[in-house]
Image (cartoon, rainbow, N blue to C red; front, side, top):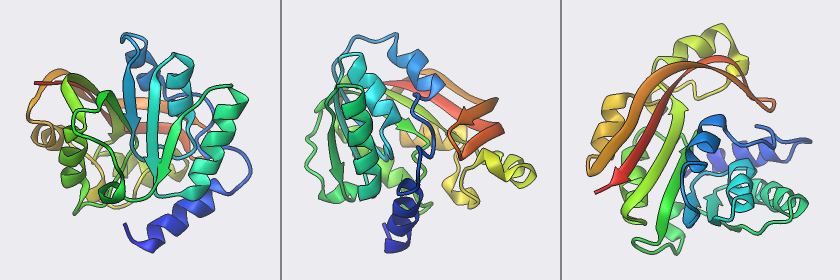
Amino acid sequence: MKDIWTEKWNDRYSQNGFAYGEEPNIYLKEQLEKLSAGNILFPAEGEGRNAVFAAKREWKVSAFDISAEGKNKALQLAETNQVKIDYQVGELSKLNYRAEQFDAMALIYAHFPADTKSAYHRKLSEYLRKGGIVIFEAFSKNHINYNSVNPKVGGPKDEGMLFSTDEIKSDFANYEVEELIEKEIELSEGLYHNGTGSVIRFVGRKK
């Protein structure tokens, strides 16, 4: 990741309050409540709202982000909620996760640059055990139209960073698809996700 990305997220997460709120993403919450606790990984976890929710449900939580300010907020939120999370800062290639380390992985608005996002998905998939679950929610390519009408709904303005169902099928080809849909939803998450948007939702089980 380029320094410009790190600066962007450090700036956002250093502001007062939580950029996307303190409550977990609704889709993540619904899906995690169906599963037994185990080891879970949260890539691009920002200020920790989803990781902390999982920890409160007795998951052993690992998370990472390129933003040190995000980690600071996440550890603050974890302390407030009296839970522990293992949070690393850095690019994926420099982190020390192991093959088949995790029972689940949550990719919640983890928008990577267009030229790396598929490679990231495939690398992250190596850390998930066979039978492990991916929970994914992020903005679809159609979301660019929603963002142009209402910038407060958030999301990348670069269409290449947005997702299609075909991309998800390709990136997670070795998964049994439990759900894969594009859907219009109403977002109310902190300061930066507010209004109507278009998302891809995916739950897959690694074969």
